[in-house]
Image (cartoon, rainbow, N blue to C red; front, top):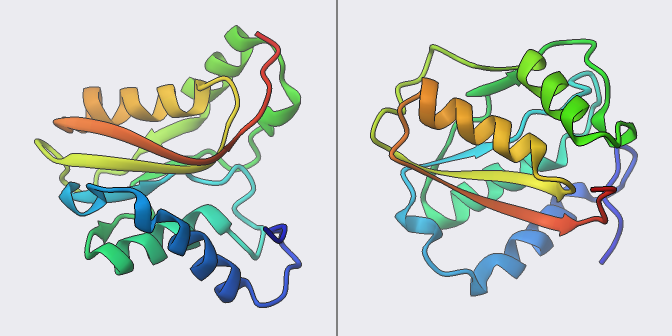
Length: 149
């Protein structure tokens, strides 16, 4: 598969190819909402996670809430933080839930591009369940990397 990056050409074609791979995944349409993990660098022009979530939602007829979760601007990129406790602390301090959307009792599909230690997904899931009142949160990621845990 071609690499996705902020300078990639034909990004809509690459996003469509990724969404095509999801055809075999059953049950996406049973979710009430799809929520992408917010980027650490929101100034980056190309945001693949948001685009993938939006394309998946359109493809399966599920509403996407791209701004439900946010990270504080200027936060440290976690890919360079190997200590799990430090990653979790930084995430709890930087991630927040928007009050603009009511997700109480809804089934949420959380989408991210990368699974490393699970810290980002755990922090987001806690917010969605505990503060947002979601009934259930499931996760879809594109790739997994090795963790230093």
